[in-house]
Image (cartoon, rainbow, N blue to C red):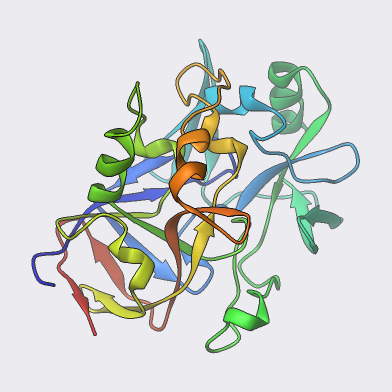
Length: 265
């Protein structure tokens, strides 16, 4: 299939908060640069997501020079890409993994705690700290950031268009939090991909992405509903999992650019 193009590039610097669309991004082993290198943890050192705290959707991020601007309603705070940390490490839980993270500082933790109305801490996950991809899907002992399980997620525009044709009210791609969105091709063709390149960067599609209730959170209002999971489960269910999008790892680490050609091998 020819004519496949990378149309959108997204990072989600703080896990489960708003994403940032980029024109280009550096590809690292753990994921795109800055993608999910921070997260919020609760008082039990458990990772926090919109699955349990849909209000997290209301935090919107943007990049200004070498820092992130984080907005919540009329409030904002800035987080430099490279910042000091509280040096004592924290053993935090993310799904079945335990990772060593560092609290950024108490000011940030307090800011998020007040707006979420619960005690939480903003923590950083250094690039050198280990978190292996599931060994069943590794190619070269790949690592992953604080994403759920894999460094990259790709979804075709036609897959979303097909889903929306089945819904009473269409949903945006941001319900699914991809890193890469591509044009042309057929609905769900990414299901069948294996080796492919975006520009000069080679990737391997390793596993369809199983979706959860987080897709039912409206990213503008933080309201939770039934869709699109209810509709997806009617025709995209496999072994009791609802699939949408493809999980990906990178074989080399250059840059990707909006408009890059995607070539299947």
